[in-house]
Length: 424
Image (cartoon, rainbow, N blue to C red; front, side, top):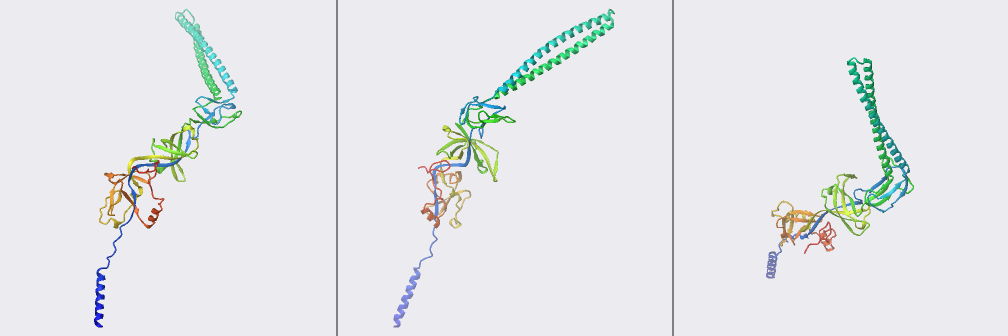
């Protein structure tokens, strides 16, 4: 019996010893899983989004056509949406009073011109009298010197000479006064003629009537400023869009950049270009904005002044370049995943090698549309077709990937402001 127990004990010890030799080692650390983004060749466009208002060219609210004289509007030749040309008569103010004023001014001018002629004749007469007085004085002086005439006669001749000189000076002064009166009358005639012409109101530009302030028969009263009668938009075949751009974006906008925009009234896009970046800042609720003027063609005059436009201003473009999701530039690996690795300085992308380890590539960011960024570097062609790490894979991201995460950037279709599908 004892021998059986010994044998069993020995067998148990051998079994335990065998189990100890074949016991499994501690489990190895599982390699990390990454979320990847493809590196592909395509186009990328950077844009600035803004809103604006459609306005006529050269004037945000149109060109006001006013009345510079008082009177009753006896005829209005245009109405809303009437097409007008430069110099076309659009309205007429009763000219009766102004015609009378003009005729009266012309009559005064004729009288003053006649007075000038009288003054000139008087001057010639006084000059003749002075010449005779000078000769008489000279003769009397010679006679007195020879004692052939009394001194009293010389004194009398001198008095006549002085009187003739004074008469000539007076005649010349009267002539100058008459000439000044003519100049005044000419000015009165010009003013009366201008007032008479102002009774006929004409269009200053080619355009279309967008507003009318008065009716026929209504009396307009002019004061310091011309009373508006009509408002004309200059040639709506080309319009301006005055955009409001925040100060954070205005530094990227330059004259000549292409612009696309939409209007709520139409299911289509319009195109234009930046023609002016104004420096007149406006602050609203502590937000500083600057006006940017875009000129655009207006086919069939579809765009009306005052319409709201949603704009996309193209500030940079890169075509047929390697791009990657912008999130790839923000990825930072954990310390344990790069132990013993020499990490270069600068902006870099992280690529997963075949053995599952990370490999850094130093690159420079090019044009970016906030979702995708152009990659610039020496030998960048080697990255084409590979994937860049954008983050670590977690249980939450796995579930999101299975259901198509809506927040993950994807290569969209070609359109302004976004990266298109990769070129094959």
